[in-house]
Image (cartoon, rainbow, N blue to C red; front, side, top):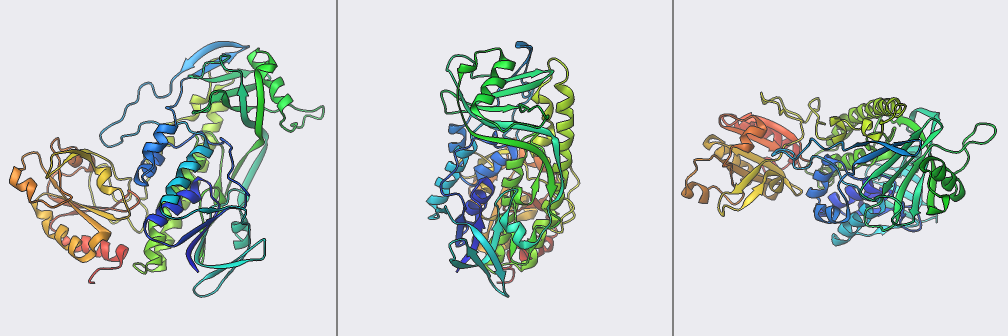
Length: 523
């Protein structure tokens, strides 16, 4: 029997598997496809997902295999009419090191995550289709299409919009499909040198559109999106190589033969649907299995990655017996409202984009907004967010970053490096935080990283004796990020969200919070 069986090996399932495996949880991940897909599909991780990928230890690989977002060139009647760089005015800040996402083919991101998972000793089991689930008091029996059976303590369906797991759970997928908003998509190759690969090209005409974005790491590969060809009855025609060539020639005014190949063709219809619950007993849902929405803003894959990162530490705590199963209720409590918000946001961004492209110079940059970065999403309403904090950052919010220095060595570092890993972090500001830091470290051991934040005036002897994880906040950027003036304690959850901001004179608040979430209080 395994602890957790994950069904579906896309970015959501792989993120969850990596997070669980690094925590020492026995995990299996299966996928019905006989081999790993090579579709480019999503454009890549947004800033919040980059933070997740950094925590998982794969950011360097993602950065090496990806490209920065490209400026967009808009055309009308075959001629360029406007260029736009949606990130021209943005830059990283001390509390947010990633101000923009990255362009990377989905298959390449999945490959990176599979490699990371393999480093934890886990491999994706392809060609394994789940067809049945039966739960008893302590396990879920999973039946596969080949008649084999396996048992798991928990099952998580990360198997996409047509989720078999969701259907077996009997959860409705309420919403609507817009049959008028139809797009054909695919991976295409275009003769090298025909189009500038440093540009995302977008042709918008009265009778349709073609959008071509270069796929990083390829010489001739492009993402192709277009309105479909339609038959005499007005219905969309199935995508085909010849159809893509006709659409390409019509809108770009370039020879059709310049589009040399088209693969992984698909028809996309705007679906806006979500579940009304994420969990039934020992079976849970994440990613597209729980919610689908318009592609405007690029939040599909990213919302799934962030579902998985919210769930991973909670599932691990329950499996280890450090928390009761009610901790899993907070997964739905926190992520279901985010799904509803995402459906609303992406529908609004789609409307804005469709309005923009009706005018010369309008393009896909209209789909982006500060909210599509994912950096402003938090869980202030959650039962895990304790009251506290008077600044902009409150319990439940994403925990901001800040450049610091290691207290002992003086080497530059960041708060995110302290947070990274499968532990809670307790930040102690001021001498008054010492009792809470000592107690957290002694009671919870490796489950908690206790970190003293020393101010600019700390002496060399103070820095040397402040503990192995102590940080020197030379420019007071950590204090500024969390709105801390006096002595205080901040508890950071393993998924990079603030759990508690408390005055240093109230060690009981920290003790009770960690005892509930770690389950080892008083050990």
